[in-house]
Image (cartoon, rainbow, N blue to C red; front, side, top):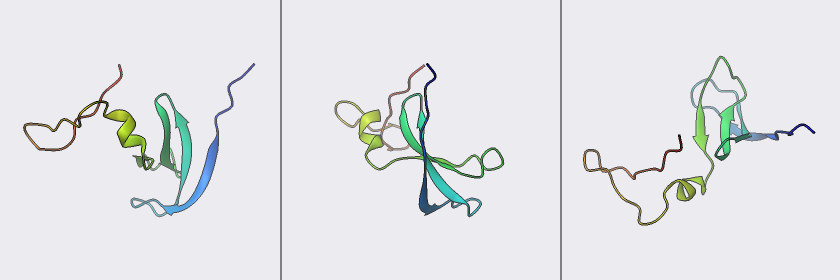
Amino acid sequence: MEKVKKEIMTKEVCPDCGKFLMIRQGRYGDFMACSGYPKCKFTKNLPGEEEKLMPGGQEKCDKCGKPMVLKHS
């Protein structure tokens, strides 16, 4: 049985090329991506997905002050 990946078109517009963004399924959860892929490679996390990337106490980077994220390899 094949896995079916969902792609949902949104009304949000890509800031890079102006095409619509889509909600897609990735290895680590849902995310938004430009419908102009592969020409445009813009992506962003869905609202609320950032919390899933930062377990525990929202550590900040010593160099830039931005929140640290958990990277899967």
